Image (cartoon, rainbow, N blue to C red; front, side):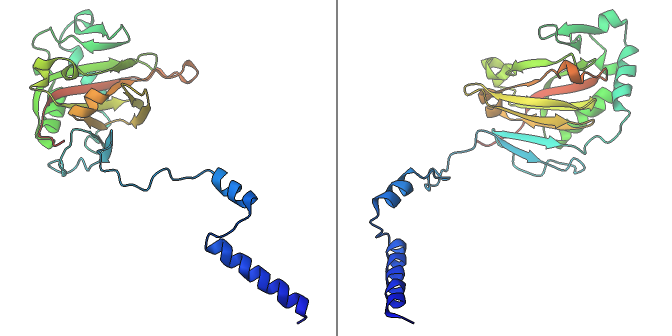
Amino acid sequence: MSNIENSEKRNNNLNNNDNRNGRNKNPRNNRRNRNRRKNTKSFKPDHRPSDMRILTADGQLEKYPYQYTERDVVVINNMFNDKTIYNKLLEEIKLTGEEKDIWKLWHGDNHMIADDRRHGWKEKCPTFNMIIEKVKNYFDMDVKATRFNWYRNTDEWKPYHHDAAAIDKRKAKTQNFTVGISFGYTREAAFQHARRKTTISMPLVDGSVYTFGKQVNIDWMHGIPQIHPDKKSDEGRISIIAWGYNNQIK
C-alpha cells in the first residue's frame, strides 16, 4: 500500500471517530443536524390517563371480566348472535298498538323512537326485556332508563350530543354508564371530543354492544353519523339504549 493510501485511510478513520464522538466541526453538517425533523417530541414519561381507553371483551362470559374506568369505551361483538332479533323487535312492538302511537320523531326529527310516555309497551316486548336483562347482569348495572331507537334507513342519523348525566346534576347522581346494543344494518358510532373536535368512530355490526363511562360522556359527544347519499341503503337499524350506574374507577 502506498504512503498516499495510508494517509487517506488515517484521515478517514479520524473523521469517522470525530463523527461518532460528536466532534464533527463541519458547520454545514451541524446545520443539517439541527434542521432535521425529529420523530420523537419528548422522552419524558407521561402518567396522565388517556382521554379514552378502548377495550374489547367476550360477550359469552357471564360477567364483564375487567375493572371499568370512567374513561373506558368497550365494544363487544359476540353477546347477541341471533340474527333474527332485529325483526323480532319490530314484530313485537307492532303488536302493542297503532303505528302512529308507537313511534315519534326524535332529536331534530332525524330518527324514530318508541314513545316512552306510552305506558305498558315494554312489558309486551319479551325480546326487548331479554336484551336489557342480559346487559344489566353482564355489567352489574343498575338500569335507570331505556330507549328503543329505530333508524329506518341510512338517511336517518343521530347528531353529536352528551347524554343527560353530563349536564344534569340530578341524573349524574344515578347515571354514570351508557350501553348501546345494535341490531340490523351496520352503522358507525362516532365520538367527537367536546373541546378539540377530534373524532373517533367504530362500526357497530348486527348484535354488537358498545358502552362508555362517566368521563367519556363529559369529555366527548357521541352520535350516529348520516351515511353519504351516494351510499344510501334502505336497510334499517335498531339501537337499544340503557342508562344507569355501575362501579367505575377514575
